[in-house]
Each structure stands twice: as C-alpha cells, then as structure tokens.
Length: 354
Image (cartoon, rainbow, N blue to C red; front, side, top):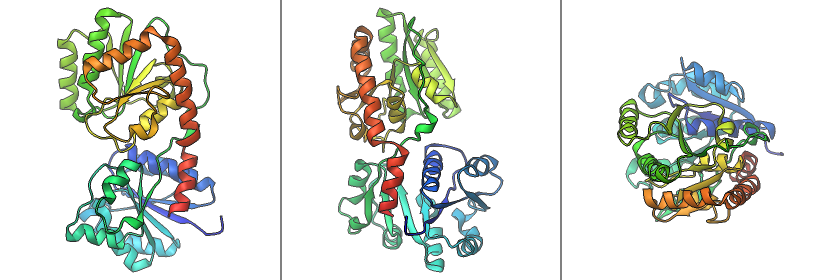
C-alpha cells in the first residue's frame, strides 16, 4: 500500500449495534492492511472504549454535547497531532462537526451510508453533499435511493457490507434432529415483522409439533412485553423462546435449521443473513430491500415477493419435508458469502473507493 492511510472513525452512538460492529470489523481489516486506525467515542462510554481499543487507538471526547460541536477544538488538535488523512462518519448527526473539522484540518471526509433513506435537498444537506469527499453506500439499494436526481452522484460508491469470518470459525455443530428450529437474530422491533414469523410458526406447529422458534436480540421493553403477551395468547409459549442478546452467534445459527429475516421495511443490507449463510444455515427473507443483492432465490436461499404468515409457513414447510433441499441451499449460501461478502472484500473495495 503506497499511500499512507491514517483513518479516524467518529462513533457517537450510546449503545453497541450494527453500525458499531461495522466500524469494529472494518477497523480490524484495514489495520491488517497497514492502515493506522483511530476511533473517537464519547467520554465515559466504557463499552465503546474497551471494544474499539481492540482494533484501534481510541480518543474520548464529548460527542453528545451539541452533536459533538463542543469537542471541535479537541478533535482538531487530535487530527493534527496524529496526522489523520481520512475522517469517516456514519450518521448525519455529526455532519456539521465533521465539515468544520475538514475545513480546519484539510482531512478527507468520508460518509458511510447505512440506511435506505432518500437524499434530502435542503440547504443543510446540500452543504453536507458539497463538503463530503466520498459517500460509501453499503448496498446497491442504498446507492440507488441516495443518488436519484442527485447532482453529487459522482461522489458515491457502492461497497457492500461483509462479515468477519474469524467470528464464525469452522465447526461440526448441527441442529438438534429432534426439532426443526426456525430462528431470527437482530433488533426486536415492530418494523422487523416478527408477528408474521411467530404466526407462521403457530400455523406450522399445529401440523409439525417439532417446530421451534428462537428469537435472539433486544428491543424496547414495551414492545418486548407486547410480543411476549401475543405469544402467550396464541398458546405458542412452549415452542417460542426469547434468547436475548447472544455472543455465541455462530452456535445460534448452526443450531438452527432456517434463519428468517421477515422485515416490513427495506433492509439496507441484511448482515444477519450473511452471517447465517456463512454458517451453512438456510435463509428465508423477502424482496423489499437489499436482501436480493445477497440471496439468489432458490439457489442460495428463499426470497418472497409478499411475505405473509401463510406464504412463510409454506416455504418453511417445504424445508421441513425436504432436508436435502435445505442442505443444498445452506451449502450454496456459504459459498456465496465466502466469495462475495466477507470483511476482506469490504476492506479492499473501501481502500479503492476512499
């Protein structure tokens, strides 16, 4: 690598989520490629400090005061002292801070777009467009939505998300043959369509008592309570379990027969699908979002144009009745992700793009 990359990610989030895992994985992969990685996190956030210290040098400052503007002087000094070449941000909340840092230090500004949100055209957002050097979109869908009628389209690049395969080492772990385990991993929230998944499993359980549904992840307490009440009211408590946050994701996926992502809104990427696919687990989702950039229907997974409890139950039933087809999907799924959606692919393309 001829050019020296000294990259600072600003992470203003209060809790660890998908965006933070992205920064962590990318920092690790870029560090292995000779980049010098730094991460700015909010003061007193011990979790962020501890995690990012594993893959970068961490700088703590007051990012939650006036959307980080209170930390302008401290970050300016840090950027100059450490000769930062690239500043990467992941939310518009700190865009004003980042533009000022660019003006004061000459750093190259990179904005990673993680959401399916149309580009806005008001003065403030035009200012962001003008002053950002490169926009990175995590899928073709995000790119298409962001660049529609956008005069700054030339600044945009597609760099698909990818998984860190070190987190999913080879294993002989398999699902419990006494059951057929359906699983979901991700945020427990209304837009994820979990009511449809639960109802589909209720339908199936009447015919196939070996059906089990496992839901991994956290959500708002009120919604979690409501969902658990619905499960209880439908009589599904004996075969539906809420696993909470799990650090052993590889085992969770490998102990599942099929992983379902039933979102009601377009997914910007679908990282949980990639994780499950790499673990050789069959997947089912819909065509609302970027899932169709990852999954080839009936080749490496199943995609439904209209995901309802009934249509989902039908597809799961086909896998219950045909284990060979399920295993073929799982094998092709692993090959697909290994070839296209690892963090190594992401890091290489990111270096070319920025």
